[in-house]
Length: 610
Image (tube, rainbow, N blue to C red; front, side, top):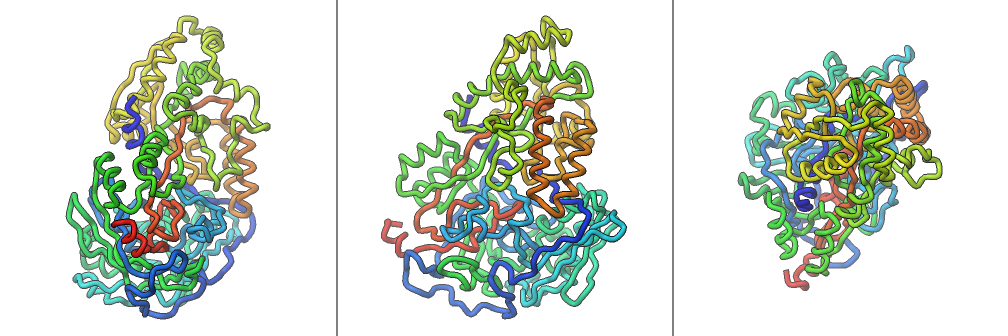
């Protein structure tokens, strides 16, 4: 087993194309209006903070310095249509709302309600960025939800020396800009929200006040729609799109309101972001509370596809921070570079194995249960992850933010019949197969991506199942082919595919609907009704909806629709001169916001010989 390849593959972003947020409900709900993440409503057009100021201190933040980060792959586009922009793009733009930095560790000064190292879609952990407040109300007819955005005043687009920058000329962001961007995501075929949200295509965002924008969506789709529009939209100046059209993908045409501007890009080598002196946000927490952000003058991304080369760059301080270490490589890095700081970095894992539940033999629950019992999860965890892995990782895995909905194998409420599924028992598996009419087992086909780590992992599963008479043929496909097969339901038996992460809750698209996110093709009325109910509950009371989710898991897990792939812990390393940082990677759904909050202790870096 090539564990490095397992890690490399697992660090790729999960497919999030059909994520959902809280939706449904029967009454009004609001996000309290307030000053936002900076502690105040900002009206100044520019920052007066110099690029480099005070003497170094272990507590008080200082301005200046450079943060160097890795990119695992080249940047192929700088446009904002995607949900998953590259780091340099993410730093140049902003969203309407997203994760609240202060709700995490925030360098030791946050509330620690969130870990901020995986996709998180929980209303109570968000805060307004370009919006001061986000309020939604169930409309009187009970079929739609109207969301009202109060746009923050005094935010300006960055001034750059490019033609696009001169076109925008540092003007103030307006409600018209937000309405334009939201509508474009729903109606422009280049936008991911348009591609994956057909229910949006006849909708528009409406300017309903000088600093107010309203969006009305069907109640059943409110959560997923708001997620894609507010958390998934980087706001650009409309005039840039109108003038440059498809050339929006060029870095020279990047003009946003973010803390940094893109000032250079060499394909396959480096991308450079420089501090935006026109930025608006203040430090929300800690000894620098109220300071103008960002602290760091420059963020440089080195494009390093090879993992070993990235690790060497971190050890030699050519990189300041790097995430995605599995336990094995984390131990090696700690031994070789004991001065590095380390923090938790979320969970990685192979895609899940789904059994098509509407066709024989997997429409028989005895067959599905037999195959889980024929899988030695304990051996996988011990052999690959030193026993640190998380066996029960579908449809949700355990995380701090989503702990209330997770039903673990050690939970007193977990039914014995589910615990039985995750206890290796080939004899019971053979007996169940016999009862299902397969005394000698059967032959089956498993479709999966032709990626070394994935093939290695499921070759182990194939060998385990052979011991109970199930002969599996591995059919290797490219990723685009797998997605096409999923979309056409062109598979009859087994398929390996990514399920949406915890951030997809509460829509639970892996449990309902006919989409690529439900590869088992689950069509169970009890599940459908329960998901619809907690969808509506979540719009008013997320904790109550999570409790409903946890209760349903007793039934879902007992049906054995999927064979979960054990998830393994990941770790983040950084040099101690990166201050105000606790290992965060994703602040909210997909936002890489953390560099705007941290600072570089330049004297400490020099003292350490760098």
